[in-house]
Length: 228
Length: 228
DNA sequence: ATTAAAAATGGACAATCGTCCATCAAAATC
DNA sequence: GATTTTGATGGACGATTGTCCATTTTTAAT
Image (tube, each protein chain N blue to C red):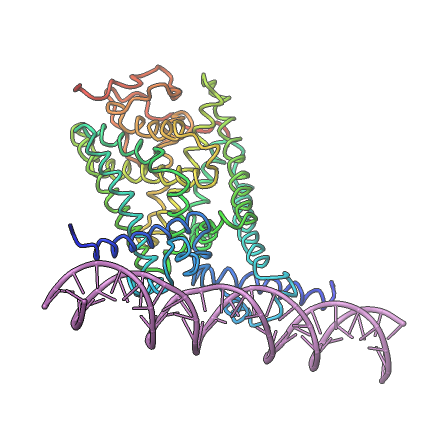
């Protein structure tokens, strides 16, 4: 049962966190005041101090919550992916560009926090651990690809691929931030896979994309996975 | 001579703008108050209202100034570049990753403004026009490359290359923001050129980078430029 | 030198910020 | 049902915010 006491308590905590995120997404951090928060949450002024000990801690908790939500979503998506590394990469990329993850609300929140993160150490750490876990997931997959293929400088290639993929995703998010209307998810994905196909032609195909110019049309892309 | 009157006037305007940028870079936007600004500028409280009509306008002017500075630097660099499109691209990429452009101060300022840009329309526009002009510069170069090479879907390839390059640069900036110490400019450039070499093997060489895995080693990269 | 004009000063001002606590309401325990 | 315990309330509080203007200082014009 958990007790009506603690049940309400937790409910109000979540209401406050939700109110912060809504306000940050809509009005930005600088306009997210205590008055704004409690008005959105429909709670009284003292709640923030009671549950979080102050506004800063509440904002930090909200940043943490948002970060966890993002990562959990991505991880859940990854559960549904196949076992092959290329499938996992593809799932991460498409997931990170999907409506559920990449939308106005999330982008606004993410960039608002990041802009202030340099000062708020705690928030910066969430940024970091998120990126750290994501990087780990991607790097693992590329390491497997590289190992299977027996590339000469294996660790370097996997690292470059990881770095490039993350940078591209990051850039796409910025694109969305600045032009949410014109943004084209398919185009974004296509560009990233073009990059990956160039690095690992045996594992990623270009599908409908424009082929790079070549003299003799040397083996554009072999079929990717072996199983399923 | 320009008159000592107007000379001082302009000098103080610049002092205020500089103070805003210093403060934003060091303390972030939320801690950049009027008191903070006038203290840094060593001027009196009323100056902001006198010269800019209010804090918001001053901050906007500072954002504009920063944006212009960035773009002017890049354009100056471009003047020294050769005439071939690949040289121009290379100059833009290396310039955008150079110490002079990509440093802690600029990155902090840039992301601080961007985080708040959604609310401050004027600031967002600078973000936009900057990206617009940069995009134009890059797109022009890729269009020429694509035209010379007679790629089938020319406009699509040029657009994808532009989009990808900008996204990668954007991602690298974010990388620098989060990890200014670990950031490796050479690695960042190498990854971007790997992407470009994959799209236009006849125009961009991989140089010292790891080669993508291929079955038969089909023409990894022809020497790029023809002149000099 | 005297006057006119403009720039710079710094404090007054209302509004808003975030914090905190005396008080009240409700759930849990006896 | 009485009592204890804990959550919730909302106003008071000092600090700080940005704006604005009466005053002083400095430069330019006479």
